[in-house]
Image 1: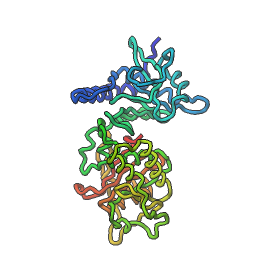
Image 2: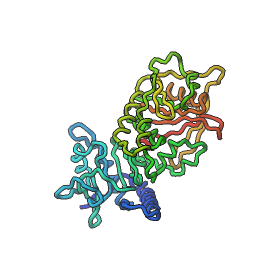
Image 3: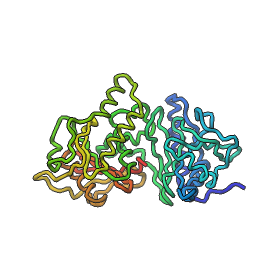
Image 4: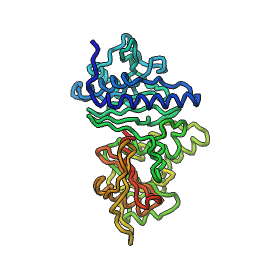
Length: 378
């Protein structure tokens, strides 16, 4: 007997997600891209989401499953781990398999035969634009895909939390003064530039959010000390000279192309770890750490920020003008003030609950613009 999906949010997003993947794969074929993924239809998408959603609430030995599923045949998976007998795609099966595949980068392979979906094994290799569904926590699922010829963080397509659904707005880059960080996260098919300076910032943002302590990262122009006017003196953890770990990686990559992703990830995690300390971490726009544990203050003669423009790249979410306190506590207020006073700088804030916001001055709107990006970083 075939189990019918019962999770209503799965049905609500299935057709939209099918159209997203079909459109991007068709565009990639017109560009003559190679080794593209197969596109799942709405029925397959709904069934995969439904089984994973109900599995996410079933603890195994006291632990809730954290799994990732990829829609692809074994032939597209390189050198996969294949089961001798394929398994039905059910919540019970997913719950049992979860402990073996919960490490990052491992995906359960799902494919179809005679109209039925089954689990054939596990893989680390996903083709370009491959459909991936990640179970983040009970009731929280993220649909994403691998960027064409890219590496690093996959592109988020939709987020489902209980009955709430969020579809990422691909036109979010049309916002006034859209920061490069947001453009990069919304570049669904971004090919080979994942290790450039903008995309390193994506790695830092994802790592900041992942450590779960909350934190602030201030990115200031190199070779200027104007940012010190917005920081309480003396700085307890000033760094002299700056340690250019990521900068060295980028230089080596540009010169000989031999720098490794592992080196970049290690460097990004180390730098992001500084943001877990109370206060803000300050880095140059060349990724040189300048200080951490820094306290932000309002510059003399400059008024305190009481309104900011808040946007989120989610379909149906309107732009709003709000008090910065609407976003959180002292950390968000301080970041908004820093972006107001240091208009060539950017402030990134991660909350302990996973919320992530980028503050930057908008010369178009003549105010601080807060970009909510947590939906893109999950």
